[in-house]
Image (tube, rainbow, N blue to C red; front, side, top):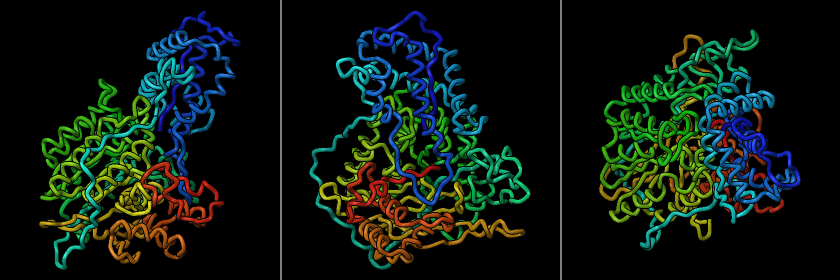
Length: 626
């Protein structure tokens, strides 16, 4: 969700002109072109999370930098850059970068971006103003160190002899020379073997300013708030416990969730995969984010007591949203303020070694019990919306290489591994996603479970062998959100996992989803009742919860419309859109379940044998509200 950037004409010599057919394009105006184009490409992408959800999943889109790269040949001809020399090009962009970082220039960039946001009606004027002010410093820093850096820009404009454009280029991590063991599917647990219950919380999105009775359909991207105003007399206002609209949750609903966990427990441990603050991403300070972190962490501790909790970092924890610079970014732009606060808040749950890597890069590993290793990944380092990755997206923080080391050590010891994170791997930048897919395939005997959130929906992603893309070898479970955003019931997940005993496979045996039915809860004098929505194996008729069972479920839903409608109802936590999900919608949704590797249409090639079907049906869904 990159935000803006426009170049100032200020701070550059007005007499500086470049040779070529169009001699009117001096450094200031060329800088304005670059930054204006950057804004035009980046702003609509940055505000996509504010688009209301529809009945059809949204197809993925290129990153703005990729679209920009395709436009360059046309721009080179249009603006007469063909005679631009390498030294002049580098001098030009060095001057642009220097000028952009001046305080007056950043303010000028912000004013242009704000006006463009308003003119294009990307968001309400007040939101445009606040969002640009929040994002402008970081975005100018990123653009001057990536797209507008002399090496990147001139390499793109003039070719590899003048620099190197490598934004989001392919890369690979290294795997050890240790041969991969033959695949060994887990044995079913013996009758009476211990079963662990793991509570899974994700996407809580507490809104400090939620207010009952306010307009749930206001003009802003997030409603049911103090600044949302009152609804027309013909429409009801926001409910006491939450609302089916573009709204997040009041604290009392999260307290109700945590205090009402009794019937779903007891729990052996908790996996909590982030997104604590609300979706008012245009108006958030670091103090706001830290208040959310400490308030909700204290609430979890209060109601779960001695149960160990293992968190992961969500994309909304930072401000600006999605802004997670790799560790080489230092100073005020770094994420140190956030990671240090997390380490302090989560210290009772995590050992010293885990806290050390958490402070550096927001990820960690630990052993919750003998024979099981837990790895918490910072999935913001794979995010398409993390604008800091435009500087360098090659294995940010060395996290994937570190993951390989952890998995190899676990394999050597005969341990199993659970991986938790926020953004699911199928929603990541292509190189990161493909490398992660390769790692999971290599360590398929070791990775016993993968658990993610982020989409707010109830879904999964199947992994296949890389040789044939036909043998299911792992599955990532994507649990539904606690928040209602957008138009959902609040919910949470409980996993039943092969328990704590010698030789345990630690695989998922089944899972249950619980919801709060808002229609019932918001009735006058009603009290909230968190109820079991469904059990996976019972509802879908699964023989077990291993990868092959989920693979076969997808193909059963392709031909069984009633089974798919059941899935569609549960996918939305019991509150699906009013519009039908026809065949294009169904195939797109099912394709996503097979696509744990992003930008890989081959994974869906067997879903529909008719090659004449529109290719758009096989584009990966990208949820609009994450």
